[in-house]
Image 1 (cartoon, rainbow, N blue to C red):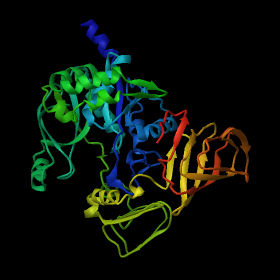
Image 2: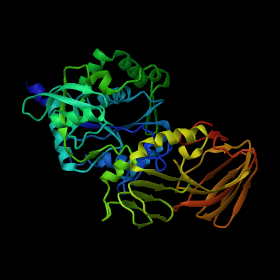
Image 3: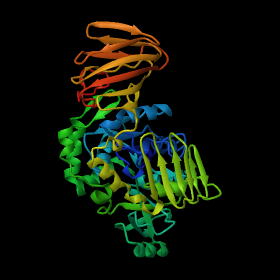
Image 4: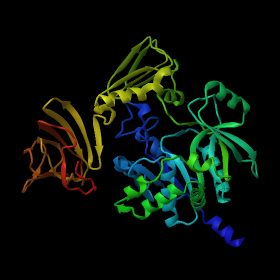
Length: 483
């Protein structure tokens, strides 16, 4: 008994932040290279940063484990650093396999440093407005998890939503703060959802979970052994790369795709649900952002430079220029540097169809913003033509671009701020403001910022092909391969 008490005292809450989504439902702000979880949609911090920050003050809180894909690894590292958080590990998925494999790998890694780890699995893109209520529910869930239960959080429904799965509660467990899980149900039609909400027995399925890492893996071995086996090999054969843990691609690809719900929670007899009434929203559409946003006297949510006349019940987001409307009602208008999206609020769920249409046409607006972030800084497209384009490049102090060459384009660089150390073939030169250089096609080159202020330069590319995949890398301190 004393040993059990000691083990409970040693339990540490390890947040596992799942950050692998592409967020197409919030296009054009959300792009594949910069999806919604990394956007400051509702405050100065991104949804990803807010997911971590709202845990501040929770007892026995450990450093987070973050699961993301290769493309977003430096975004994750930089956004965590910006809020003073040092992740225990940033786990890189070679490919998407849904939440069960991602969580299994995180649980295996958590147990390496703490055999009493209790993992709190959180999507990176949710909004929770009542932090105190949320933390209270987490504490209640921690108590159940330490008893060996697999906890899920059921959102107390405010309306008969058809876009969520539901959880039907069973009998209350000891203390009455949690309930057994009677049933997980798929997304219902409106009439069925109304019956669920009226009964008072159903909750929205939040996709948030809390359990002892060892107990979850025991249940995985019982109910999803193929997933567990693949994840064990992926972790064992994985590699450490700077701040990142790279799962073994071959092993991870052998894992079946499955969610935590299907793989374990619907099968185990250890699942319990804790009601959560904390202003939760998965911000899965522009209309959801209108619902949680601060509204003006005409019930509009506005962001940016906006001028409205006879406009009501709208969501207007102006990212780069003035957006003006007259006589508009119940619409969404979202403006970015390269795109404008307009739709009735009742139709915004169809934006995914629009993104698919753009992808089929080879449009880059689904992938990148005009400003693209890199581990060394960022570049912003200023002008694009058939055989040349102009970019503004910003290099952070102390950062170095890869040693590289291009087969199809030449580059002209003009420094407008700071100092650039340039390698061009066998030459090494220092350039300061208003100085320039020329990089011919096929010449190996590199740029770095040896100064203490950001380096800004104008790059003019010219050639027969200007795609970002025309890069041959010889050295790269960020571990990126040639494209």
